[in-house]
Image (cartoon, rainbow, N blue to C red; front, side):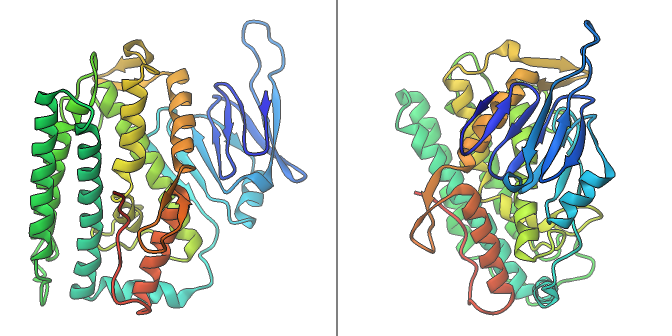
Amino acid sequence: METDTDNFSIPGAVEVTMTTLYLMEQYSTVKVEGEALRVQFPKDRTTNQRGRMVRVPLAKIDQVMVLGDITLTTPALQTLLQRGIPVHYLSQYGQSYGTLTANPGKNSGLRMAQCALRADPARQFAVARQCVAGKLANMRTLLLRYARSREPGDQTALDNAASQVRHCLHQLKHLAAPLAIDPADRMHGLGPLLGLEGSGSSAYYGALGTMLRSPWEFPGRVKRPPTDPVNAMLSFGYTLLTKQVASLVWAVGLDPGIGVLHQPGFGKPALALDLVEQFRPLVVDSVVITLLNTGQLKPDDFQYEMGGCRLDDAARKLFLTKFEARLEEKVQHPVFSYKATYRRCIELQARLFAKYALGETDQYVPFTVR
């Protein structure tokens, strides 16, 4: 077991950072023991010896990710909820099942303002447009970054994709908010906005394969299930990042189920999905491209089953390690002009959304990097 002041890990079993506890060892049991969680691993089936045990200080944990068949006792869950620590349940391979959270915060006024924003077509459109603008701007940034280091042919393809995304951004500025929403409109007045988002995303994902080095290929975005290694990593990363955003939205006092771009639905974290759009290219896509282009993952690190593709246990742990490291990287925030980790920037974006909902600022500024 490696330890330091920031994190410790047991390969293939538990990964802990200052904010997230990932539980990955199947059939483990988690109990509360004083000011720590006690993780008991299952017996070794070949030797029938008792499994290892590790204690995780509660003071290090801001959220828990449970991947697969792992048991948290009632006292353990109660302790986590009392401390406001959300527990996210996923399949062993990253499919989201749901989240267990403590009682809503006491700031009912903020949630009322959030609902009022959602009911105001002009203000809702304004924030939704900014979320899309942030997403497209960061996609364009990633395309241009990789274009600088590619061969002329690939560079041209990436530059062309960046130009298409830029064109969508330009058109986005001229979209007018609907004066009223037709009850029969399934897009709730956001049709033109979603069209530009789709066009920009199509250009970006169409060029993502060009950012990858041999032997990796990207057939285009494929979900449910992902059919290739790149899509498997993207889907896994997007799920993890959305859980991160949802936790920070709760912490700010907002309701993650009431969004502006994504429509509310039963168990759907619409606001988290709105805010995560700005961070997907910078956090998840960047990690995926780096892991593949640097050879840290190989084709045999992936498993195929029932038409889908997924990371094996070792690859999944490596991905989690790099994903968390990316969240802890510092970048300059476009509004506050100081450097903060990506994780802290996500929280700041939630707070900016809250300020706009309360009428304390006249616009929501998306998170973008140069």
